[in-house]
Image 1: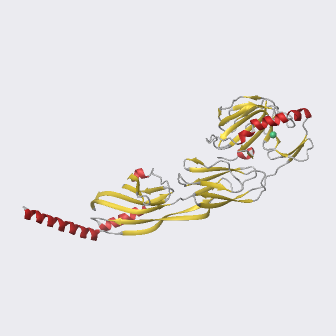
Image 2: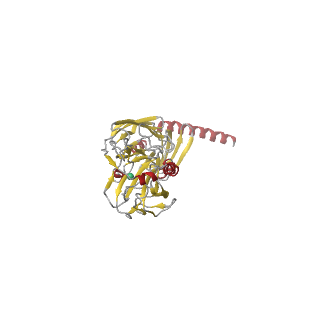
Image 3: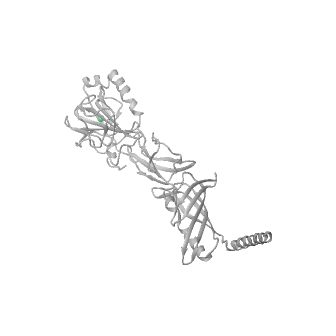
Length: 413
Ligand SMILES: [Zn+2]
């Protein structure tokens, strides 16, 4: 028995040796380094920066059908792509992904489940895939191992590179990681941070009319990388208006300390508040049917022979008393009451710092806290407050930086 035991141990050792030698001979190493994706940083289709990453692929074949599996491995390589933060393997396999820095497994599952997996930060990852096969070439398991270097592959869209004074520019950044730090610096500062809309980072930049029409250098910063872009601001024609307002009106409004203090106490705090929900969708609509503009956006206005003008931060739509005023977009009513200076006043917060102001109304149909839908009746035209006749003063702003409502009606957000 003892001899037989010794023999069997010997046979076993020889068998292991033979297997490992043949296994070693059969071990076919296929290492290939090739860029599988080259991602440009696109600013409105103009390439300004470029990042590439590579996949190193080692193919290990244990047993049978070497040649066939070699081809198979090349095919596999062609089936691997990196799309943004996703790794796509277009074949059925069991996959595990390990973060090489922390030696931590971050994914285990089928290639089907891998479609829903998103890398949350850049780095080097060890990917192992295992596939069973059973066909005319034979039966076996193929193992694949490769290193995937995942980097941010950004795409940047600007709604307009040549915005007019008073326009609101939308900046979209695609392909960032969830924990990436994204910020914009430059002459035009958005006062809210990026809004994450289904993985797309959105930011709105108000082009204030106080800035001269010229080119402005802006910087988008994503983590430690800076991507410059330019805003080439176009001149908008602003008119001047000289008009008189009776003393009885000015005394109770612009020239009244009480009226100014009330405005400061009630309206000024609204400049700073912001609902982080985005209520607004698509286009903003004109809040009134009438189209006659009695005072345009940005107009320089000289009241009662004043030597210095005041800037008109909204649009005055002249309309008969009682004309319906509707919400320009979805939002939350933040303020709805009478104010000496601006008369019956409604302020709607549309979210992300975008607000609409409605002054001089004859009546108010909503109250603070109401959620309003685009097109919903909110009040009626009047001539309350600092006003010379029935009209709607309609103002839009983002964190108190006025934007031109007439341009807002044309831009799809
Ligand atoms: Zn006005």
